[in-house]
Amino acid sequence: MAGRLAGRTIVMSGGSRGIGLAILLAAAREGADAVLLAKTDTPDPRLPGTVHTAVEEIEAAGGKAVAVVGDVRVEADVARAAATAVESFGGIDIVVNNASALNMAGTEALPAKRFDLMQQINARGTFLLTQACLGALRKSPDAQIVTLSPPINLAPEWLGRFPAYMISKYGMSLLTLGWAAEFADAGIRANCLWPQTTIATAAVVNLLGGAEAASRARTPEIMGDAAVALLADPAKPTGQTLIDVDVLAAAGVTDLSPYGGTDDPELDFFVDER
Image (cartoon, rainbow, N blue to C red; front, top):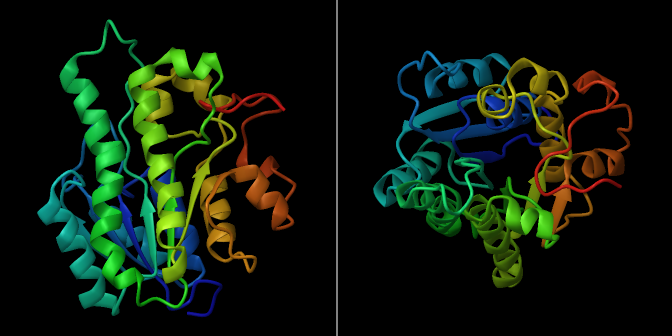
């Protein structure tokens, strides 16, 4: 399949639904193949889709995909995902650190096990998946790491709103910026990508205000299109924390109406008014 990502292989944590699936579908339409590491082997009545239905959607969009049922916190599962990509598609060109856990409780209310879960999935999972893929990434002619994590916003509002979640997401960003520096000589680029607004995912509906919150959120497709624009950017950026609308604007996309969100969309966490 011809396209801006033809012949490229993506390994992603998560991807059964929401933003991760939107990225894989947009990449599939541009010719990319994918390996998804996710736990959703069977349907959950609270959440749409499984890793298997995601594969079906990716293939319907024109790509090839393989599901790996596993947990990004488990080293053996992560290693299996990386090995599957090499065995199925000959290598790895792109790692997308998508899997993430959210808990908005403050310090006094957050159980230690919930703190641990966020750190293990968000920061540790990002580390493990990227580490497992590095050997194959070094062989790619244009290796990239994209982590769905925010800019490091040190405003007191964001430092103090939910410190445990904040540190897990900032950990993802700092790791990614660190890899941009650590692996610059190896030609491996690393960037963070984050939405300007909330995105109409199951998390928004279930945790952030239901249908009303979803009505002020943009669709996941905006992150899919932004991710493809970043991955195909001829300027080859690295070491940046990028916002979806800025990536799209640089690619010449300024009409955001197809992505919904009304005229007054809700800004996402860690994003300030401009």
